Image (cartoon, rainbow over all chains, first blue to last red):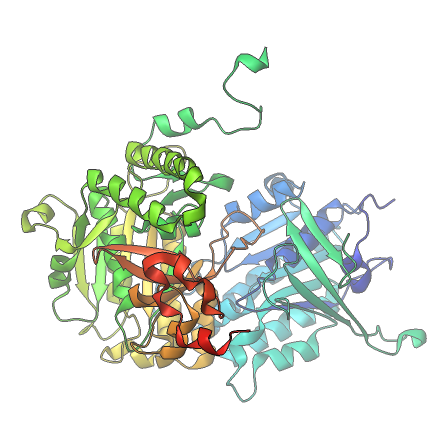
Amino acid sequence: MDRMTSNLLDEAIGFDDPTPLIGRLLLVEDCVETSGAFVLHHLLKRAFSSPHSSNVVIFLAFSQSFIHYDRILRKLGCNLAAQRDSGRFVFFDMLTLGCSDRSGKETGEGVLVGLYCKIQRAVHALIQENKKHVTIVIDDISLLEVAANGSSNHVLDFLHYCHTLLSEVGCSIIALDHEDVYMDIERPLSLQLEYLADVLIKVGPLATGIAKDVHGQLTVLNKPVEGLQDKLRNRVQNFQFYIKENGTEFFYSGSRA
Amino acid sequence: MAATKPRTSSFSRNFSSAHSSKTPGFKHGPNGTTFISSGIPDLDKILCGGFPLGSLVLVMEDAEAPHHMLLLRNFMSQGLVHDQPLLYASPSRDPRGFLGTLPSPGASKDDKSRDNSTEQEKGLRIAWQYKKYFGDDQESANAIDSKYEFCNDFDLRRPFDRHFFSGKHVECVSILDSSSLSTLRDRCATFLSQVPRNDGNISSGGRIAIQSLCAPQCDHSNMEWEMLSFLRSLKSMVRSSNAVAVVTFPPSLLLPSFSKRWQHMADTLLSVRAIPDEDKELAKLLTGYQDMVGLLNVHKVAQLNTQVPKILEATTFSIKLQKRRYLVLECLNQAPVDASSGSSYGSTGSCSGSSKTASLEF
């Protein structure tokens, strides 16, 4: 039995399916005004509170330290430190990746190759331990680009490799990216990411301005799973959210009590 | 019985224990964060406490006005008053010369009378019988402030004495001539190694102030990724130490996409803007337009260890100089368009044109 009460976001992503995200790429896009990090926290909690103990999360943290995530998840009712000790949470502290030693002239490519090797090793080790469902979380891709010294081709290669890994062993990828950093670029990375993504979640501020009781709005685009004839069309859903320390409320526009 | 205790609820914070064992200049915030002051009392209030230790503060400059210097000066002065180590980097040839312009704290006695008088000015005349309540509020707030000396008022017209710097830990770096940012990165790293983060006791908090990081006269100004990488490493270094870094930059000199990347990097994001001198339209719209020197926007408030965004009452504030000395931030007050009630605003109500009333008579 699933103990968590399902909410709009879970339904839109498709958590009512038995195997919702396996082999899929979920992309969260946010902007300066509204951070989309809460979606990652929500999904992290979701991964750890589901009854399958074979769920493992590999977390690539480029933007925050472990303490930050630990404190947030603790308030959500999930102990990351304990999960890490039990091997269900693999945390890669990437805060200083690629910026620690510039004098060594490590290229952006080298940094990413090294990172991918680490991930691949971790995934294969987990598969051997019979931990079936591995989720790779990347927070966030724009900082991955900075670590790669701006070479978006290398970042894209990296993501392609991860994507291959995803189809090989059936893990899933959750990535956060900023939508507004690609404004004046001809072929932005975000377009290619959006093409790769199976589920796309866009987080933005309210169109009507800042409000106290609504923190922003979400658009969830769920591309159909191949082979399911009845779900040929993309499902797009819009709703709003309110972030609290112990969870996030999702509701349709105007329907909040 | 619980009723005999001064505390009304078991959930209230135990202030006496939180404050007793610590050095002045620090304030405990929610979620295990510790604040240091920005040097502007009003800004601390707006940001719900100040700048949290371990955060990166970015200030977007007005390319045509030096308003960001006001923020930088007060931030640096506050650090000096609290004896906190300071690293200042700027694209000028002689960054140490900037120290001569730092404001010194105004006399605390003076403060009190000042605050009270402004409070009285602010109060509407019909509310005279409530004045004593305003006064009480202010008094108690002042008492707390002076007791812990978290934040001082700085007198912008009175610079620090030269000999004041002698015992202080101040480093100045010019980023004008260095061809890459790696030297500045190394300076920051060695500086931050003096204020490592060890949980529990905070003995000192470092302050890094970097002015106009992407100024066009620097060699690195066309290396966008280099600068982003520097910011990223600065952020990660600051995270693991008891320090706050304030970096100002002119966003108009960056490509829009890079400007956004910088903004994403910030924990606290502010912007300052000058207001045109003789803007009749704006003067009509806002009360106290004459006293304003600029506008401050709060775009992002640091969310360390929490996922809940802080929603502020207002995001735009006017920067004013009180008595031409003290920097104050105020919410924008929109003047009534119909000027008939303009006189009740006293001396500041002069902005509403009287010619309009004549045409609007019924």
